[in-house]
Amino acid sequence: MKLRIVLLSLCAVAFGDEAYQKPPQRISDILNAPDTPRAFVSPVYTHVLLAEPLRYPPISDVAAPMLRLAGVRINPRNNGPHRAPLFTSLVLKRVDDGAEVKIALPAGAKISLPKWSPDGKQFAFVNSTGNSQELWIGSVAGGRAHRQEGVTMNASLGYNDAFQWLGNAKLMVTAVVSVRGNPPAEATMPVGPHSQESLGHSGPTRTYEDMLTSAHDEALFDYYATAQLMVVDTASGRAQAYGKPGLFAEIAPAPDGQHALVARVRHPYSYLHPYYDFPLDVEIWDGSGKMAMKVASLPIADRVPIGGVRTGPRDYAWRPTEPATLLWVEAMDGGNPKEKVPHRDRILMAQAPFTSEPKEVWKVEERLRGMLFGEKNDTVFVEDYERDKKRGRMFYVASGSEEPKVLWSLSVQDAYHNPGRPVMKTLANGYKVVKEEGGSILLSGTGATPQGDRPFLDRLDLSSAKTE
View (cartoon, rainbow, N blue to C red):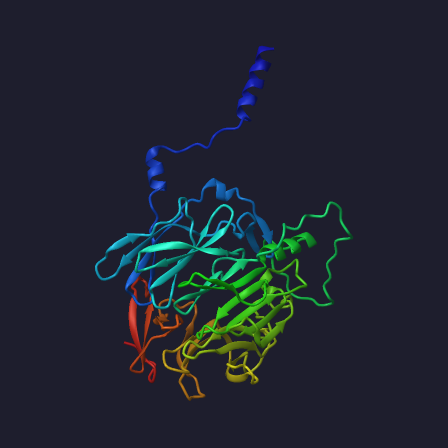
């Protein structure tokens, strides 16, 4: 009998609640040592923002509620991403003499990556609190930052497009819709059978996490991801609505600050694909938020071949050296890399006031991987990728020339001969271009060698494609 009582007592202790245990102080000192700050250099190279990463999120952040919807994880308490990389402090450092000013932040601040205004005089970031996402704007002159009143940010789809500079004194932000009521409640009983329809088509089925699973999930996604675009004047502090609310998959203001490319998600949703594969309406809006041009109305991307791309317009980019000229890519092989065609992609262009039909600019033999714009008007650097041979090429298209010039062609797995990436510069409108000097560009890279990395800076002559 005594033995039985002792065992029961031990079981009671083993299964009781315990406090979190801490390691010895020497180990805690190592684990809690400050992380290396991230550096954000101003576009005019006069100041640097040093942001200290949040190395270990508190248990309150880890245990915060999470909605897994359409490929994203949303914290319903503050309408932000669940467990996004954040920072805890911000230091403004002057380049010429190294003088530093610590930016005063609220207690327990957890901020996003800061973004500089094009003139390097201001910067903006989002502060994530327990119940909201706050927009903060800082000034180099005063070395201070303040919260923007009257704007509650919607960062449910991440911080990347949640705030963007429109010139030097305005920001375009995604805000929580002012009147949206309470979150949709789940039905106490099903209204009908749960069914999914293939629409008579077949396609490859990839494995994604956090997909929608029910009509209630759809309603929750609409509720938390739908945002109102707003334009904030940093001088006056005035915030004004821009266009109608929507569920925005992409937002890209034009260099002129008077147009914007917006891609809005629409129904029907998929339970097998993330939100960026949902049907999209891609439009160009004018300064008042009205549609100036319908670029595309894309169906759900549920039949994209493995290694393929979506059909219709994709990979949109504003030309940095013009006020409002949009370029995009369209597949000429049905998005299928196994199709044998003379050209896989073509590049199209539309210009303000967007009353004329888009015109074809170039065709690319292989799949286009990216476009970089040159400092001089109309120059473009185009990359393509040959899937079967795993080769990548870089072309240079000069102003007034229809024939692209091959700058290099090599295996994407050949690290030893990787030519590097073009050095960029920031224009006064905030857009980045390839820096050009006297018919040459600069290339920088890690410089992989059998003896280790040897970072390099090369000059490439655009006429001869030779480097030094």
